[in-house]
Structures are given as C-alpha cells and as structure tokens.
Image 1: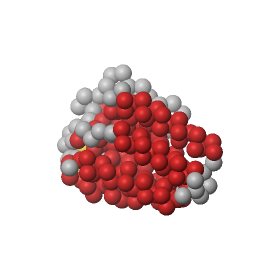
Image 2: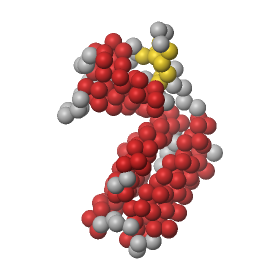
Image 3: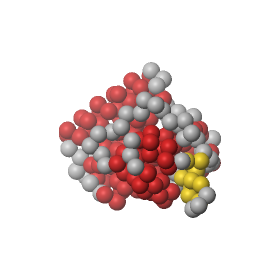
Image 4: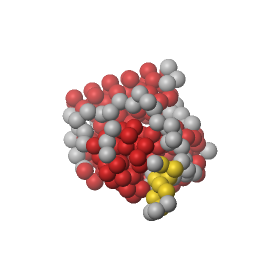
Length: 215
C-alpha cells in the first residue's frame, strides 16, 4: 500500500480530523486505489497517530461511501463506477442552485468581489491547462456561495457530495472548460442585480453541463 513518504501533517487538527482528511484525500486522488485493502496499522504509522483515530476515520468514510468494511476480514477502498456521476451531479446541481438563490438575498459587495477574484484565478488555471488547480479554485467559488447561505444543512450535504465529485474528476479525467468562466461571471452578475432566479438557473446549468460533456 504506497503511502507518500513526504506527507505533511496538517496543524491545529485533532488526530481524527488529520487521519480522516488525509485518508479521504488519498482515496480521492488515487493514492489509495479503488478496491485496495487498507491496513490500519500502516495508515496510523504513516500519519503519526494511533490506530484508534484511523479506525474511527475509516468508519466515517464507510458511511460516506469511500470504503467498505468487512468485520474480521478486511477494509477496502470502494470501487468507482464511471456511470455513478450521472446519479451524483443532479442532486448537487439542485443544491448548488438553491445556494445561489439563497445567497443572492444577502450577498455583500465584499463577497461579490471575492467571487470575482476567485473566478479570475479560475480563468488563469483553465488557460494554463492546470486541471487540478482549476478544480480546486472552482470548488472555492462554489463553496463561498454555499457559505454565504449560512445554512449548515446545505453546507454539510454539499461537502459530502463534492468530495465524491472530486474523486470522479480524478479517476474519470473530467475536465473543466472555458465556458465555466463565463457562467461564473453570469452568476455573479445575477447576484449583483438581485436576480435570484437567474442566478439559480445558471448555477444549475453550470453543474448539469458537465454531464453533457461527460457523455
């Protein structure tokens, strides 16, 4: 089970948070491959923690659908089915659309400026053909809109779904396009104008278009 020797441990996190975030990231980016059996002792050693937070993290990751645990036998990374993206994106698109609608009602000028700055960085990543950077900045853009809603239920569900989307981007070579730059701009403009319905509609299209490109 290959674990990067130069792994840097996050600071100001509990052992469980550290273990959970890192193991999830290794699953998402393919360091831990689909179907790979996980050894909690080796994971604990690599992360510099005891086996308890690793086991707790694996239990949580099973609930999220990232690992499968077979008591007394093995724990392994779940397989990733290419077609599953068709089930994953529609609910996330609906949730992100609702976020845009709610955020439009009380977004501040400072937050609009933040969104514009993020989209500029997103454009640079797209034009430089840096797919991973573009994905991370795109997440930042959408996360800010979700955060503006101040709705903890939306935040929790969106975070879980987004993690699975990220995994599909890595394993299925899904790429973001220049069209997303313009859609982001249109979302910002709609929010500026207080047009919540238009912001919601463009946001939904922004996510569902990925399915069209995926086919």
